[in-house]
Length: 450
Ligand SMILES: [Cu+2]
Image (cartoon, rainbow, N blue to C red):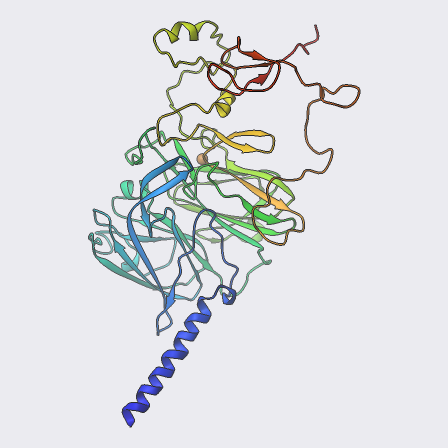
């Protein structure tokens, strides 16, 4: 009898307990607006009986798509780079199980988070390395809020060079400051992947060729969608080799926090570019304005995809006749670069396998001519959801356009189309070059005033 009562009490306790867990796991009951990781995900958790939130991370090799057409052999948390976001609340006790499926030992460091020294995750210094096949338990109580990171600490050059990093976001217990409508997190990173191969070379120190937001390169980056007037927050993280000055078009923002804490309002100043150095997080806030706004790294090679860094520069060099001569030795050679590299954007030429075009991405007015660390903030009036709304419907008279219009107001379009590579390939209508397949461009006709 006594045994039965005990059993029933235990069963009821377990039921109540699991109901609490279920209620707290449901997103609508979360005491915070969840952060969105474009192209990424948030790690789910369960609650142990003592109230601790339990997370599981497995560090392992994985395949990761940088953009359609390019997949790399990365080292990941739970099959992703960056790893899934850990999203919690100040005061939470967290219990994080880390399983190592890498071929070498690892440890996980909780970057910027106040933890007991023995939970800091440095192989050799604060703990034994987690051997391949083993699982370690990290456990601590969160005594702060803000944007932090986790990453492997132990052979960092290789492990982080292949992608072992993620966000650790701690919400304040009670809302601080104005309500945030849209909250995004973007991890910055750079890689060197020899064109035609798939494994990033982690030994490279400076000359990277793939630049990513959440390990995706444009046109593979998911846009950030907001409603006009929304208060938007974007959190950036960087544990790479390079600093990245991230520029947002059309807005002025304030840097409101670092991984050291909130910046007092009296110490914030307006900006259009935020530099995020290795080992830093930066959080910006602004009020969204209607439009399609570019957001990109302002280092000129960073919103670009793989290119040979030893290509000769030929701006202004007359290459007439060069192609014909070289073609005798190299049949596929094309003389180019004379008028800039924009022509590259429309050449769907066959590169090495598993390599992205240097720049590309189609916009409503043609090729965008960007790659790498480039994405679009799409802000619209009166939208009812945050699905990709398509291209911005510009109000009449607000788009820059050609001044060459005839008396009827029609655009005076040039009548001859020519291949940028083969001047002899001319046509009176748009089309493709019969020699190389490139899109024919309108020939510039004499408006130079003679
Ligand atoms: Cu950059």
